[in-house]
Length: 65
Image (cartoon, rainbow, N blue to C red; front, side, top):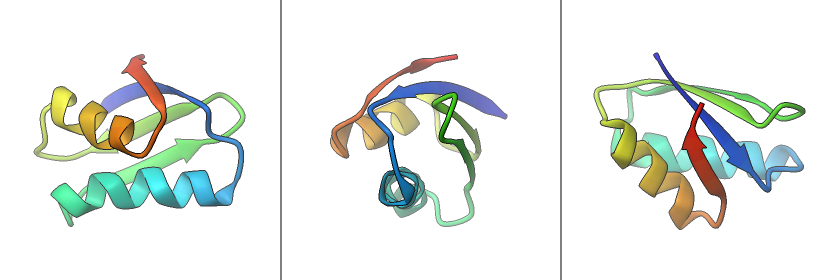
């Protein structure tokens, strides 16, 4: 499991956007978003850099947690 700290998420739409961005690259990815803390957990074959780039493309700041 990979963990990331994502800034800028504030609502359900943000959760969907981040989840769909990761799953667009790996349909089998499991994505858990904790909105209050900004923590995103991802179980996927994708590298951390691939996950972070997908989230950045949605307009969020992201760093490894």
